[in-house]
Image 1: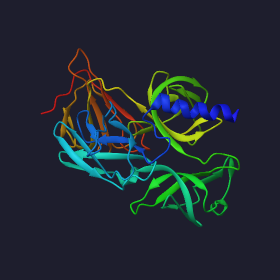
Image 2: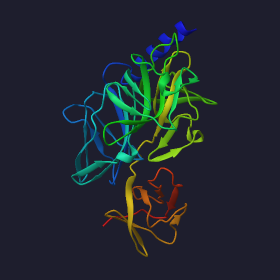
Image 3: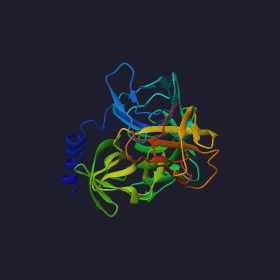
Length: 340
């Protein structure tokens, strides 16, 4: 069985995602861009690699070379270059970017990473993987195959797959570490984009690839983390996870990509409230007696994203809190918004 499935997974990854990262030094960068009122182009400077943000402000770049440490974000009045810790070999990075004019920055508190590499040192509670310091704490889950182990169960010289939060000093606070069991291939990550064609419990088919989701799978739509019930056949997904010869892709992170329908997007802090308007950063958004608001928390202090459709017989505005743990709020209006 293993001999049949392993080639299937590898060949399918090459055929279905062509730009997915399987081995070598290329990786991926995905995340969201906030602060703009329109779709933006996100590009790797000095290369032809670029993409456009979707309707939620999300972007995905695959086959990004190791060493990449900046992105150029442009569109409308925005033209900014953001800098970050350079991508390591075969790393998959997730980040939140905010831009305003020629200024841009990465929210370091919302930067996560996934990578695999050789273990060169083990000094509990820390270890070194692919030349990077990996820190562990009581919340870090470490497994060899399906069995839980401690840091001292990891051996120098073996391969390990690490997921965690990138720290400002370049180290990683690990949430999960996986090392291969006896007879298993060394763990490795992949990232690819495909259509969700089938849902069977916690088994998905994305493109032609089998994808397994579980409690450890983080699913995002824009900045909001959602549960598996948000997944629907026909959606375009970014899947990042560990390649498993027997089960397919063990998904660590899934992003629901939402086609842009021409809506305008505003995200940031609510800086002013008037009788007939709300100001988000520098964008004034018209509201009236038909506009509805909902959700938990104080709207004065919440960061929100609004959508503006081109003028039609009716329009909708959506507002979702930019904090990952806040409940979503929504606003619906009977007229389109106009900015001064």
